[in-house]
Image 1 (cartoon, rainbow, N blue to C red):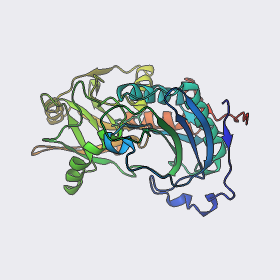
Image 2 (tube, rainbow, N blue to C red):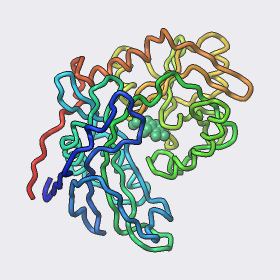
Image 3 (spheres, protein in one colour):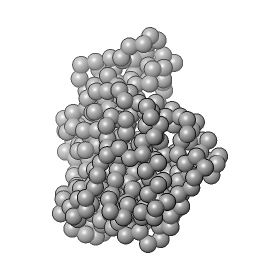
Length: 357
Ligand SMILES: Cc1ncc(COP(=O)(O)O)c(C=O)c1O
């Protein structure tokens, strides 16, 4: 990358990390990447030791929510090579979010090269333990200092890295949200923007108080059709059909979802992306046709769902022998850890960075 400057930490903190007991999202690696948008172009790309940043009280992201992010993972193949999973798709989705939130796009080559650079420098932070990985969080936010509703002229794009353990160590329980919604047609549900997650916090808290891990969202108009889970897309395996809700503008276009669809279809399964009502799920469960339910997402990869509560109804499943979710998990993990051949070219070895400054 042109003009990238690198300022190394004097001493790495990696030796202090207990990789056997990694919490999710609490430990940050040594370095961060930053690049600024000055109103016309992206300038001053740099990697430096992680430190606190000061924020002006008029920072527009704080007031008006122009803030977007991505979530991806780096793993280590069995020969030790650090691998990225489909980074170009994350760059594309980041830019789709940017367009929707009236923010500047980040050139894909800068996004991808910056990921290579930061992961290359902090590769000692990629856990060597199965089930763990290094979570990569690219983010972009407004940096103009002004009170008044308008799009900011200036922005910061950053990447931070966090070694993480498993997101859901066991199968999960979902509560069908009876009242609140996540996103409506024409809204920002398809963008990975901070406000979507803020809006979900209160219903998620109510679900947790009832003993559920996550909310299962229904559509905003009919309050009938299944959408997605807090940080995952969702798949239903019936005896004669696999279904996942169609991405029609209100749900996030998950990269794990797209990968799962490709794997399933490549293995000869028919998967229907369509409207699926919660009543259909319930009645097919009652008829004995529902075999597996699982969520797909970067953080959890594949999370088996063992219970869904919908009004006063309970869908209860035993995931101990699920073949399909296990086969997808094994295939994606096999690629990510280099234990099976990556015929699709989804994993990319981390490249050495050419530093010009
Ligand atoms: C709301 C939401 N849906 C779905 C997903 C799954 O997307 P991906 O598979 O790209 O991680 C995520 C995670 O990023 C999410 O936050």
